[in-house]
Length: 113
Image 1 (tube, rainbow, N blue to C red):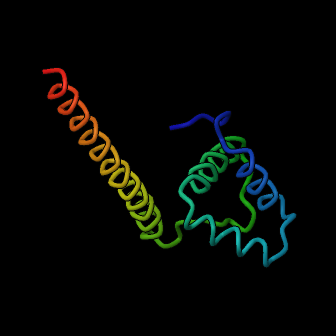
Image 2 (cartoon, one colour; image 1 turned 180 degrees about the vertical axis):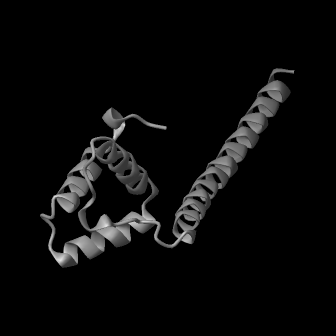
């Protein structure tokens, strides 16, 4: 788990603006929607929420991004899909590069021998 110092500056600004009530209703609704879909933003929000609760302050409107318990699972599954696609794509690329290198080595051995 990351520390408060490792939070994304952009996320901190958005969260601060949301919690301080400086967003319009439209911006707040868009932020809440993004919070449901962006795992990093959600993690940062939770960390800041924990820090606020430690100090005895309350969240604006008492918003809970996981009012629906399945929201967190949806976010995590989507993130896992994205990572899986990236790894699969990179894995095929690595395999192709390795096969090319083996072919080059085979040609060099054949020419030298």
